[in-house]
Image 1 (cartoon, rainbow, N blue to C red):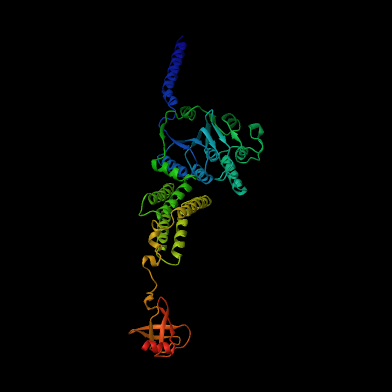
Image 2 (cartoon, helix red, strand yellow; image 1 turned 60 degrees about the vertical axis):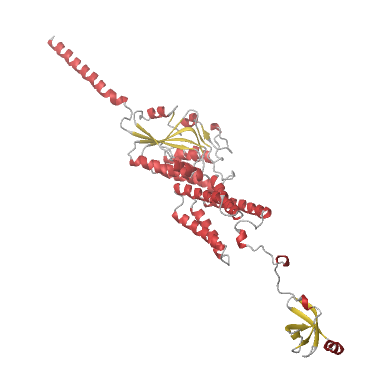
Length: 452
């Protein structure tokens, strides 16, 4: 009996300790990620160099602050391949656990970005893929560019332990995956269910809160990053469509200003477009001060060309300006195309202005001579001595055929019609052409009549 009582007491003590331990452990189990920090970084809209700069800044901030996890919320139709490559390098260099959360679509460069994350989660309506590389004009890129892009997609999938076949099918239409709705000739696009089946997503979640719960970070401190105003402006100004527009406005503004008196709206618009171009590229990390120095030098040389002979200053100025634009671009081919578009537009505008306005207005009026030396405006090459017509005089020197003659006490240089006339011989003016006075010798009887 005594022994039973002891066993009863011992069991009660064990049960009490177990209950207390449950109460003690419950708060820790319930607090998912308490004390940890999660950074939410959006990856949305067109992928371009401004986005790469934004992600570089925010991931660096997350690393410096000791973040425990980064969630990249992706919703993008794709964009520039070179910018996606830079973003991929940012992802690969992260020491912080991270997840890509596809909220709507991750196409083209967007799918490549997602594949570089440690984990991928998708909303029930999200899609990922369709990653064929195309040129800015909508045509398919050359085989070399396509091959490089396919290799990048495959490497991104392999870096996270995913089957590279599906990444290849996203970028290579020659891969036949008809069972996933991508027969040969079409790029693969995965919905959340198919992506989960092939191991391209770790789960399907309805929203951010559910994702945090799945990651065990519901109670973690959340820090949401957003692009700054300057970064948003830079992303817009470095958009592949905006760049040729800015360059065209800048060049057209300069040309129109040459036809306008003083410095006005066209010149201001052109200068502002140029400032915006370089501002966006500087904020995006594409342009440095060397590009600005080259631009200023080039503009100065072009202006100097209006006052210096030879054309060397103008050619050097154009080369300096083009070089500054090239230095500000990560893609030389796209920048060359943008400059070509701006040049073509400028030539067309210049032709139209010359046709309808001419060179009588604006800056050109100061460097182009418009006055004609006509007699109506009082311009004469020399004084025409019409008053001498028919006047008779006497040669002072022999005319062979030119010489000097005296007409009523006025000594004049004269020329004969071709023959020789000795000195002290009578002559008569038969023609005056400016300073040229043509005389004819008088016969002997005419001389005598003159003396009488």
